[in-house]
Image 1 (cartoon, rainbow, N blue to C red):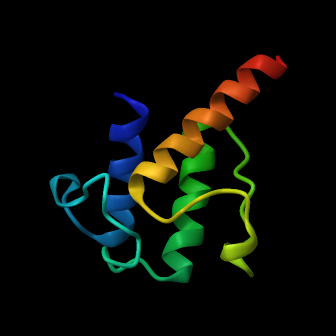
Image 2: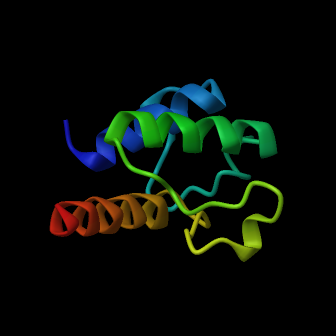
Length: 88
């Protein structure tokens, strides 16, 4: 399963949707994910990929992690995974 597919599955679960309802252009807001769902999604992503997401739940706009669309989340995760791999 690719990073994209895993992220879509996690987000779909949080939004109580089918993965087929989640597109790369979807925003979390358009999928009905609220702030609690966002935090739960971030935790699930961290656990699934064994990474630490630089995300400020109190002020998401101040985070270094772009959560504007599903595509930006996938891209951010791939970048974090590459950085983690390089650090090892």
